Length: 135
Image (cartoon, rainbow, N blue to C red; front, top):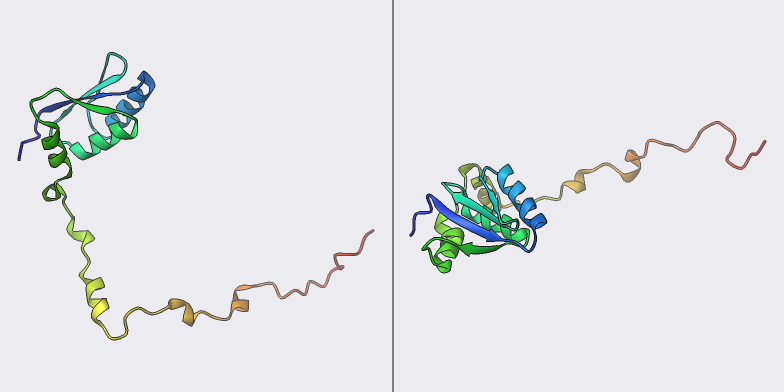
């Protein structure tokens, strides 16, 4: 697999406004974009997330113009390779698997709810004039 350190990418956009929007978004996420010729954005991938950069540029209508010797297919493979996707340990929850194995399984929590009228605090008696009394 190709090392993505110090890789330069150039995205071309339909107009300068789209390039500016993409550049602003990329900058907010820690990239160092440079707008070139009004409608192109140049960035360096230095340990940053290649997939995010591609998706941000594409969401603003940008197209990748490769300036390095990396073929397009290799860029795509590096961006979406399953080996590159990390899953933090706090996302994996063994308790859900253990719960599926139990006899009781899932339970509808609404079965234990009080009667529907218990949630309505107004008993309807106001002790005032009825609504049809006019002065």
